[in-house]
Length: 108
Image (cartoon, rainbow, N blue to C red; front, side):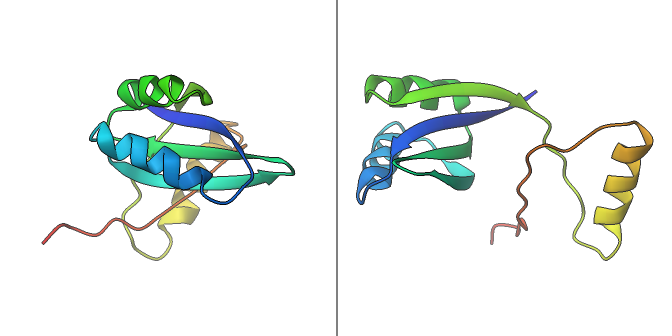
């Protein structure tokens, strides 16, 4: 099952730099992210290539973080496919409580 890394961070300039630098030193690839403003703090959600290693690297940095099981779905980039996905989820009474999407491009 795919994992998402949730990190609670101080809402201040430079904090994301220290997190990304620490992940870089651990050879962690950030594949997707979202940030939610929570006032003095923010919630950074990451999809990375090595979730357990990323968790340990950020815990060593003193970050409050947690790994969460998520459902990751690849949807081909074509008109109507998002509707097909939402129909399948609704038909099985599955509610989406959090989501983010992005378009993947092949590496050249």
